[in-house]
Image 1: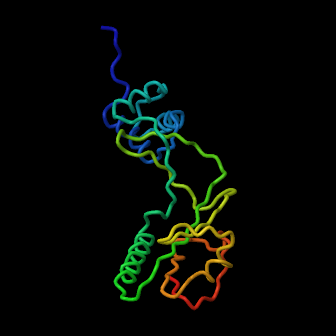
Image 2: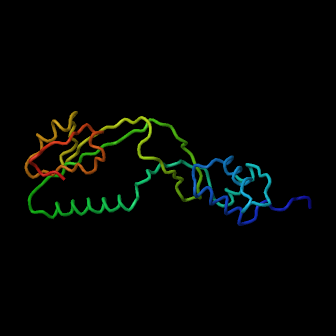
Image 3: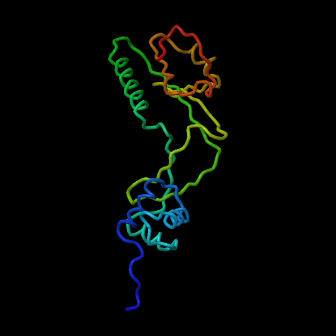
Length: 193
């Protein structure tokens, strides 16, 4: 009939899909190189086109999509335990009979370094890549909010503490790097979490 047989068997196709699942940032040329170099799983493949790889990925519902950056430690057991402890602390404060007002302080960082923004993964699964916590230049901002709205103070360490009234609770645990927020350690007679 003139058509050649399948280049890849089912095991080899799944190996290509697993490469992408293991590294959502992988380029088609990288997959091509790994297939040609791998003499264990792909022993009968001396050459493969990028089109064949693309068709194989499409057949197994792997698409190009937005690449989301996930910090290494975001869902580590240590971080999950810290989250659980934080929720427990807030629940204990809410159960306390003494009236209080929560003031939350948080920081947000904007990374100036460039990375690939697109990657591949199976349809219905987010394409992610783990990234180091800090690398390259960043811009950091810090803010505080309470039940009465945002506290728009330029220097939180000079203005937040004097404004904290008896019964208010200032939660600084969210702000990972207080130095980045411009808040040095300070003494306070009020309730600080």
